[in-house]
Each structure stands twice: as C-alpha cells, then as structure tokens.
Figure (tube, rainbow, N blue to C red):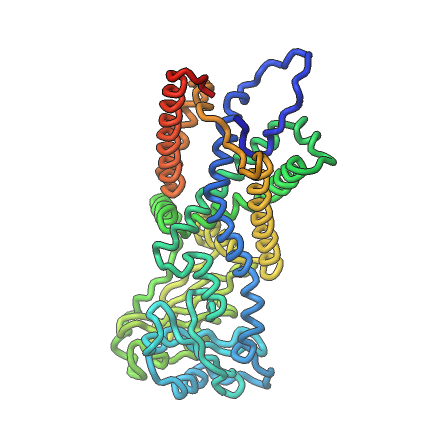
Length: 468
C-alpha cells in the first residue's frame, strides 16, 4: 500500500548495513504522519478560505482610506470648532436616531465622527457614522460603521466574510475549526520535518514530488511560529473556545476591566441642560472632553453620552496601535467631575496580552508593517495547501491520488507514551470542541472503514483468493 504525502515519506533504498536501533520516537512517527495527512486533507479547504479572506482583510485597512477619502479627510484649517458645535451640525443633517458616541478629530486633516444608533434602515448591530469637518462643521457624508475599530462598509464586509462567510453565528464554526486545527497541523509538520535530517538533505536539487516536498516543508517551518500565533489569537474570540477562554480569564481575575458609568451624587438632579442619552446632556461634550484631557487622555478618544439620568459620560481612548492607548474615565454630567478612572497600565497581564494579540491578529497593532506580515503568512498558508494537495496527487499512480498511511499505527506506540498522549488529546478536545469533535468523528469513521475492509479481506481470503 502506498503512503500519503508528507514531509518525510520518501525512504532511502535498503542497504546491507545494519539499521540503527529504533528511538522512542519511531513508533509515534506513523501516527503523527497519518494525523498530519488526514488533518491536512480534510481541514485544508477551511484553512484556504480563512487564508484568502484573511489576506483580503489585511489589505482592507489601506483600501478603506482610499475608498472613503472624502469622508475621512479634509483640508487642514486654522482652528477646530467646539465638539458640541460639530455634533449639532451632524444632528441637523441627520436628526434621526440618537447619538451613541462621538470621536473628535484625532489629528490635523481628519474628520470628526458622530455615531447615531436607532437609525431607521440601519441594522441594530451597526451605527450611522456622520463625518464632520472639524474646521467648518460641514457634513462630509454618512456611512454605516461596525465594531469598536470603526470599520466602514468595505472593511466590514471583508471582516464578516473572513469571520463567518456572511452566514451568521453558524458560519463562525468554519473559522473556529480552522483555528483549532491550524496549530495541530503545524506541530505535526514540524515534528515530521525535524525528525528526518537525512531525508531533508536528499531533497536538495531534486525534482517532482521530492521538490514539492522540500518547498512544503521549508516554508512550513519558517511560517510555523506565525501559524501558532494566528491559531491562538483566533481562538480567543471564537464562539466556543473563546467563551471557555473568557471564563478561564475571569476565574483567574484576568478579565478586562471597564470604567463604571454610574453617575455621581448630582446625576439626575442638576443636569438640566439637554436630556439623558443626548450628547448635549448636562455640562456638554466640550467640558467632558476637557475633564478627560486633564486626566491625561490624549487623542484618539471616543465620548459616550449617558444612557440615562443616573449615568455618567464615558470617555475612552481608542488607539489600539502601538503604543496602545486604552485608558478610560467616567465624567459626572452635572458637575463635570471625573468619577472613575481605568488605566491600561493597570490591566491584568492576560487582559493586556489578549488586547495585543487580537490587535496583532487583525493588523492594527503595528499598522502597515503588521498588515504586510499577515498577508505574507496568508500567502504562505495558501502555497502550503496547494503543495500539500500536489504531493498527494504526485504520490498516486495512474492519475489517482495517493493512498493514506496504513491504519493501526497506534498499536505500536508503547503504553507509557500512548496513555499520556490520549489524556492530553482528551483535555484539548474538551477545551477546543471543534478540534475534539471532528477528531472523534474521524476516528469513528476510520475504525468503521477499517472494520469493513477487514471483513471484506477475510471473505476474499476465504473464497480462495489471497488477501492483499
């Protein structure tokens, strides 16, 4: 029976010299090889979609600046108008809905965003972002915005395509499946590649399948660290594994803290100007922003009006690039005094790592350099998948794909290795259900097919024809 392509399936011709004693790794190698083969073949389509859509998402940041240049940028003027005046201009042009947040112009030549919620025709998961010239109060346009990163329609469409294929919550299973298996396939490939140094040397200068094998293994080794990172960070906000990770962080006291929006002692009494939930409620946006500046909150910031008469304004930094600015304050709408402060420097370690990991995964943390690296990793993954399928084809005969590694490899693994291995897999399967469930299904199907093949072989042998 021929074996499936992998990084080490080509063996040298038998020689007359005695074979060296087998290491403790030898019984495990066929098992890892079979897992790497099947995981690669079955999960590769999901990984391919994730890689292509991820590459598009990494490029969407720069594309967004080009497509929405009119809304995002304005000629630099002499002096910026008060934020309250800019919001009033936005409300005059778009009186529908309520102001849910305001992002004052963060730099010279950038517009101010006024986000409106409850706008007819706009999905409840989105806001209508109205773009205002901070120097003239001219409304430059309005676009639907999704998420805390300020994603506009182009990036939002690509983001959802990458995350759930525009299929909603059920579509998120594809990306979680890809993230759950990417690291497994990478580990298997690394183990196989580094376990056979002589085989790697023989791949140099070869052609055909051996050359494909060399390219597949070499690129996989160099990109493995990036794949581990993408897998780990992708799982942090996945549907099932992400919820488990959040629970674990909370139980360890490592949850991300948030500023308290409960108003001060004067809230609901002395805030006569405006109404609760309005951007002009209480002392107004400009005094609230001044109070936040006094606490050291530099641009870019987002101001969230009070939700009701007993709530405070919340001003938070929204810079997720390096250095990260995520400080937040609550400001009493009646007095303009700061009632609560949360500093990013005081975040628990795991909360910081989660923030940085997600932002690095999405291409925000280091800007264009980050995005170029992500596109490079996505391209590497696409090439590895193409080479993997090509090796499978080249391994076959007569225009057919090659056969997988024979079953029964686990029977040759010593119990002292097999038992801890099975225990570790069971634990991982519990915390990563889209790793554990597909693996269990694969094993069940593989056992069933093996039993069918065994019975057919016995019947053939019993009828007088030698079993093969």
